[in-house]
Image (cartoon, rainbow, N blue to C red):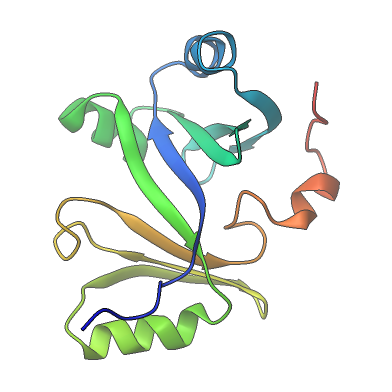
Length: 154
């Protein structure tokens, strides 16, 4: 029996070696529109968010040789890294999924309204699935428009 959709697709994440080169392809060839860029040195990545006919594409470039993204690209090459779904109560959904035997990893609470976790590719046929709510997890969270230090759209 089919269940209800787990949430709404917020964005897809694509691991790339060079943001400028990948961004040029997505903008010039695919017709994507720049939304914003952001850097997270502590986590070892920088990103660019692009809008493409209602789909948000997140390009992720590793910062440094020890970044999880560098390890991903070295192992798998550039390409799809994850899919992120927005849902209102990620904590409850994570508990439900774990109770059903789904491998849920890397849970983080950023604030009372922002929580994320990942469904391991071991449970989801090779696809890393991020479940999230709020800023900064969701690429389309309204707070990105006013985030400190965030470059404005070009």
